[in-house]
Image (tube, rainbow, N blue to C red; front, side):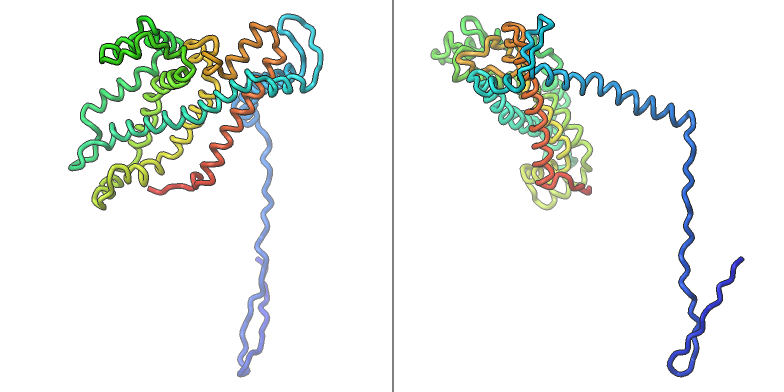
Amino acid sequence: MTLVKAKTLRVDGGASAAVVPDTAPPVYKRRRKPLTFDKVSFFVVFLGLPLAIYLLFVIWPFIQAFGYSLTDWSGFSPDQNFIGLENYRKLFTDDIFMKAMGNNILLVICLPIITIILSLVLATLVTVGGSSKGQIKGLRNSSFYRVVSFFPYTIPAIAIGIMWGQIYDPSGGLLNGILTSLGMDQFKSYAWLGDKNTAMIATMFVIVWGFIGFYMVLFVAGIKGIPAELFEAARIDGAGRFRTAVSITIPLIRDNIQTAYIYMGILALDAFVYMAALNSGGGPDNSTLVMSQQLFFTAFTKGQFGLASAMGVVLAVATLIFSGLVFLVNRLTGGDKDVSL
């Protein structure tokens, strides 16, 4: 054991005090453990293999699509002549593609907002929208409402499109039949999908109808995770249902809402199945045409895979930009801060 001699200093009054010199804390060099077979195998199986699969089946197709977009490849021959950004110039000077992009932007703006608001209202009603007295609970028979609302999501999208196409049928459709029976003779033989003023609205209604139940169940799960004491405290303070939803429910399930908005926005940027089933030709005056439909027509009808690949790249970039904007807005509005219960 090493002893450290203390120095003696004289202070006022002739007294002396012992001062222990500062000693640096010992430095322990961290020994690097050698790699073992268990560590290497763990990294390979749980990190290397998933990364390789992701690069092969996700990143590489994107790179391929971008490479094809720089050529005039027809898709049915091995000839691929490099033409640079010519395909992108064609896209942004093509009135039909720009119309399709505008329709996608309209869907991105309307579909997530409408679907999420309606789903949130329904989720609130079946969880905490019951009697204002006694235990916090949802409406009576709320389980039945959940099942009925979720049922459309279990139906394949193509089946939903075909079914609603028959409902909107101008000659013998159910919708016109109901409206006519109620005395609205102006809707007799009315073509909902054949009028450019109603085609997009009717199509958006179908998409909202198909997804509102799924997002309602997602929000129900989030609301169930909120302690009932918070709702009881808000009730005691005299907060109404709207104030409770704005001040308690929405902030505490913000992550669920953000996830729902991103997924619904991605669906709106695609929407191929619903549009193809309801209006395979793009609707009157291309009023329901979306970018994915135009991509399909360009590739498999016109045989211009290079141009279609450029459309796919634009669609992918638009999806990434949309997701980034949602995260940015959420961060700027305080969504990245933890909300303590």
